[in-house]
Image 1: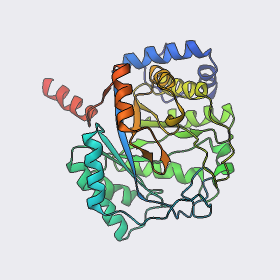
Image 2: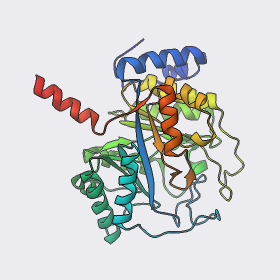
Image 3: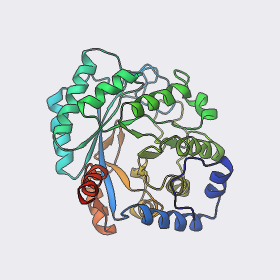
Length: 332
């Protein structure tokens, strides 16, 4: 088994890993996970929608798109004090990363962006890794977020380049890649993954993983989401994602990107503890905690704490990589 970090994977190699017998794949991924990471550690992240609904995009899975009738109330940008109060509750419950999401197509240089920069500064001062997902970003905006203390930026590819136009027409795949490039140039860590259950083929899933695993630097975080079909969206009748598909995606992502945080993201409410345990064994080492993921239901902090105790898991500390780097520098 190749235990070196690689960015030169071929589609054929990824196909071979993805299509290998499932129990063999889980075993290999679990072994590699153990080599590169503390398998008892899971990063607990909390995601808050700081500006909800009314988005001009047409993402077929999203209840926040203005053109769909999904029962989502449009809400203006939250006040900084409310956001910091929520972040404190998340921290007290064990979260070490706090992500703020705004239903925007792109960031605009206006007062709302200035307010988000203030929120980033506030959460950063609390000693949490602060993440944002705000849509498309210019290099200058990414730099401003970095200066405010942003630790990570989430911008998912969603699916393969080939399937992308079936899901979204209001921006291109290259727009997404350009935002990720701007984030990287600003020195902010990249959080980028996708959603399965969008009507894509296994080949599309393999191609999305290929795009992620062959970036010049692997994303520090790769969320694997299972579609949560929402009434009123074009994908409301899509079938529930099979747990084995989630496990296969997580294990393959772990094999391709051994040091990356692989996030077991949307869709956990439909999973039993046994199913989630399989995902952790296959290489997932991060979850989103809290009652909601933007607007979709999510297990509560208490449920997750019980699961952690049962499985012998512990929350990963904030800024672990940086602390480790500093420790090694002092000892050298």
